[in-house]
Image 1 (cartoon, rainbow, N blue to C red):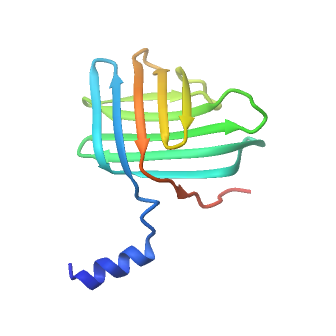
Image 2 (spheres, rainbow, N blue to C red):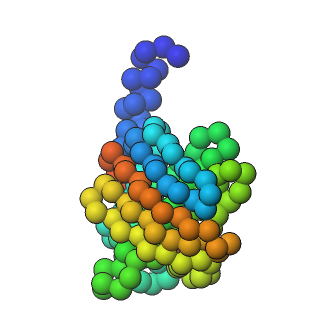
Image 3 (cartoon, rainbow, N blue to C red):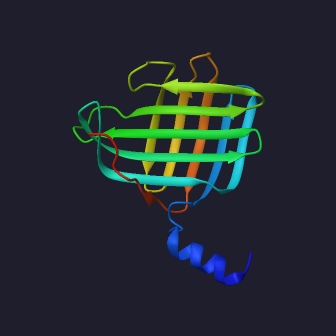
Length: 143
């Protein structure tokens, strides 16, 4: 690709949306280690099922491994809710504390660091840290 095309793409697609992410998770007997391109986004004013909340989302894919996390932090001080899907070692591990109640867990976000301590619906522990280098904006959806 020509340098001018890369420059034009950089102007059109902000770098914050495709931020570098360092991921270090223990998922059951497997390790999910990644450092590189990921997607880290945030919306300080969002809502989930009519509950006002800040939203942080992280996604990453490398080969057969993938991670998708949505972290909802209610503005009324209630516990954070998460939806997490991690695929590693040929298996997908799910945690959803928002509505479907698959698995359980706690997530803490402090600035650009997200710390996970969860149990997948299938019983495996998921622990570790996601470090985003920056956060892009989330586009509003729904009604």
